[in-house]
Length: 287
Image (cartoon, rainbow, N blue to C red; front, side):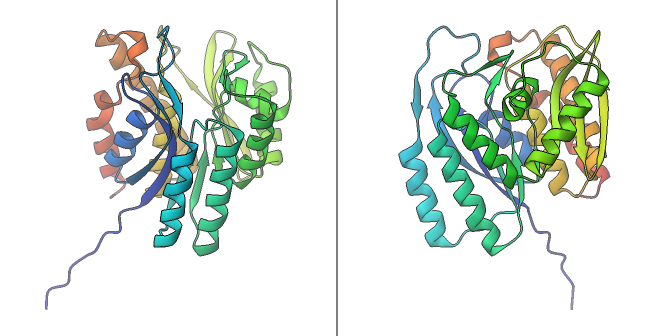
């Protein structure tokens, strides 16, 4: 009798907004995770005509009522997921929905929980983010295994003044304090350190920096790409530090290739330009 190997495909429930034009959120999250061998079940938190950075006018509709009905049906079906990954949440009510979903999922089995606490950028909270939303997010991140804030979001979560630049000691202290308060692993992205840039992480008591070349470009969707790769690498059982280093490496590569392709900034990052490299990377780990 011939023996047949059965490979279990990891699954991920992804709470993110859906932009119908230009790359960010679900249009970055879904293909990136699928390339890394993860089956994605999307939960659109909002519907937008375009991504918001660089477009003067756009359609925006929050999707809370539909989310409630979708999650109710999923609960009826008894669905379970290997990962829960949230990004933009349109209100504190949506934050509560994600929190409840995590609690129900963990009552059934263990799932990797990744929270990208999308609250703001450039030293300012987003227009949809108020005090209730920030307070709710501080509760939600306590249920995460990993959170991936930028420096603005880290300041909001820690209730600290915004900073435009950091020393190594300052950002590592922020990462350590955020890891302690959230009880999760933390990666703070896009950290300016004088003339250099890095991500700062704390995981299992180890806090460190991963530097990267500061390219003469930035694109919407870069944070979504980074957090999606981290989720995919971790689900592929790649060690945490290696996952951070690889996510930094391929995020930089995506920015470089998007820039060289001549893509307009507001069209967002082009993740497909690194997909062949990600397939090769996944293959190195036997996934």
